[in-house]
Amino acid sequence: MMNCIIVDDEHLARDIIRRYVENIPYLNLIAECSNAYEAFATLESNQIDLIFLDIQMPDISGIKFLESVEHHPFVIFTTAYAEYAIDGFEKNAVDYLLKPIAPERFLKAVSKAKELFDLQTKQTQEPERDFMFVKVEYQTVKVRFADILYIEGLKDYVKIFTTKGMILTLLNIKAILAKLPQSQFVRVHKSYIVSIPAIEKIERNRIVFGNTRIPIGDAYKDDFQKHTL
Image (cartoon, rainbow, N blue to C red):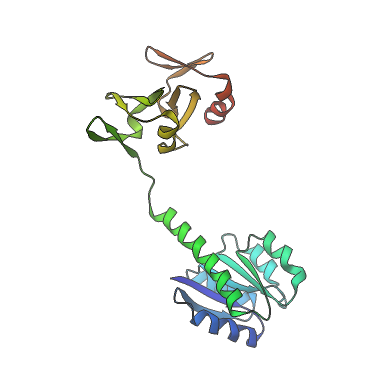
């Protein structure tokens, strides 16, 4: 469910949006506000996920109201004036509805908001994995990212060098790179991927892991520097 509020100084406009909201099963209307002051108070005391916000309002416009809220919910602007559309989208609004609002256009806007809300919720609730599974002969083995030092590509195979030993698996280097978190791993050569947290030191154009020195290819230098600077 998405908790939403309607902010509009026109009673008729609020009535129309309220009827539309009542027909959408995943929308839960918390309040109807006739001005920005009421909207401020509602945001202070409730968890709001979506605002239907009129732009042209007395005292404080919808644009000014949004600028004053530091971490605002998703916003769908509603207005009778098409010339405000650019201002609305510059404020990262989900959508812009021109009055009178057609029901199918309203549904399209809230569907877009729901998609963004679900994506945000999923990212918040699901912690990033700290491991991957790879096939080793007839077994599937869990490999923790924190244990990986570096990976060497051998055409259709890769060698995963970890703190616990070496693992040989039937994957090419591009496929294994896609399984790894980009914040922790970087490709430094056509045949090598390294774990950034595991790097001991860098000597000229080589990365040192104990007695092993891995070359940094010219094509990968810029990307490597972005990860290590």
